[in-house]
Length: 145
Length: 145
DNA sequence: CTAAATCATACTATATTAGTATGAATTTTG
DNA sequence: CAAAATTCATACTAATATAGTATGATTTAG
Image (cartoon, each protein chain N blue to C red):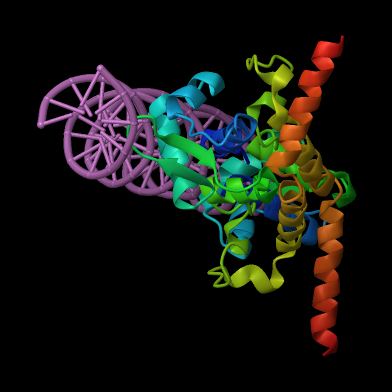
């Protein structure tokens, strides 16, 4: 029941791109340094975000990435599902075609459904913008003291 | 973010023992047959439940297992945490000693905390008794039609 | 004593995780 | 134009987790 580094890093990348967005393209190297993540691993992760259109890229020297739309468009759930796959706690909930013949009489399935709903309710109701705002409040707060 | 077979089977074993509880001891072989789970694998799982005192065992011929207390005493959360380990979505939440130095400024941590709470709220509020009742209602319903 | 059961532990095959490594393709810049 | 800087694509690897199997010791009823 753990979220892997792939998913967690992807969220941090999106937040990093949002926080450092000036319209310019940001290099993987910079993000990796700021976030303390392996450059090469980050390349793979950001490539997933790129293919999904969550970020835009420019190749070649002075190339890089920027967040595609406003941070309010990206929920944590979208990013996690993209990178981690389904957030459902059991495979039975993943596809319409359940291979399990027990589903009809499976009392536990209801619990997993409840659990899936609870998980989705959280991750689908926090956006990168929310995280960005909290971050900015935190920074503002740290100066005023 | 999946619950493994170990945890899911453990819940099913507890429900099976609750549903078939007559005070007699029930053999692994019977549970395995009813639940369609490998006997040997089930032995390992029920052994965890036994060591934790969730079930009682009698060794030797005519031995077996029975649920230790009333089914209302066992939440899904207890069983999953015992067999799966922590249900926290990230390791940062697992021990007091966070190895991560980013925690102070980690905006994502708040989301993971919310997620952990949501998960715990579900699994800690469903007991084996609840599942048992639903099962009995279902069976009663299927007869009356 | 024997059969039936739990108990304990070692082993195995597969998949996943968390990266590294290599190099091609593209674009700016000197 | 050449070199450097960058993304893009893919293959590889080490470590760990998952989902069991296998072997056999221990215990108890009959």
